[in-house]
Image (cartoon, rainbow, N blue to C red; front, side, top):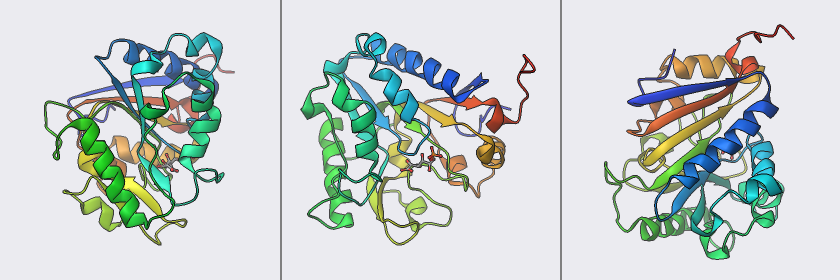
Length: 251
Ligand code: 6PG
C-alpha cells in the first residue's frame, strides 16, 4: 500500500479526522525541526489543507517549541497575485502562522509575484534558492529542503505541477512560470527541486481526494504526484475519508 515507487522509505500516518491530522502533523514538524542541523529549511504548501496545521503551529504551546531562529520558510508554488491577495499562498501562511511567530524576516523567502513578469519571478526565486543552497544543481546526497509539505489536487497535481503541463518536463530550471493552465498564473518549483528534500510530507484529507490518492499510491504515472522521484523519506498524513478506510471506533 505504501508508495514505494517514489522513495526508498515511505510511511503512512492515518487519522480519523482532519483536526487530529493537523494536531499530529504540528507535533511531528516540531520534532523534524528539533532534530535538524544548523538550519531547518521548510518548504510550505498552499491550498486549504495545511491552514489548520499552520494555525496550530502559531499557538503558544507549539510556537514555543519550534526553533524559529534557524527555520527558513520557502513555498512550493505561488499564484501570481499580490502577496496581500486572499488567493496568495504567502498570504495564507502569513495570516495563519508567520505573523504570529518569532521567525526572523530574513528567513521568510516568499516567491516574488509583484513588479516583474511571472518568468522573471520564477528566475528570481531560483536565484534565492541557489544562494541559500550554495550550488546551482541539487546534489543527490545534500537535499535543499529538510522538509517539504505537499497537498494533493483532485487531478493529482502537486505544487503547481498540473497534468499535461510542460512544467512537468523541466529538468534544468528550479522554478518556472505556469501560464494560463489554471488561472491565475502561477510560479512553481520543478521536480528536481521538490525532490531535493530530506523528508516530504503529503497532507491529504477528504473524500474528494480519494481517487487521486489511491492512484498516486498505486503509482499511476498520469498523475503528477506519482512522478516525484525523491531519494528522501515520504510521509503520508491522510484521513480516513481520503483513504476510504472506515474509522475503527465505528463513530
Ligand atoms: C496551491 C497548492 C496546491 C495544493 C493542492 C491541494 O497553491 O493550491 O500548493 O498544490 O496543495 O491544490 O489543495 P487543497 O489543500 O486546497 O485541497
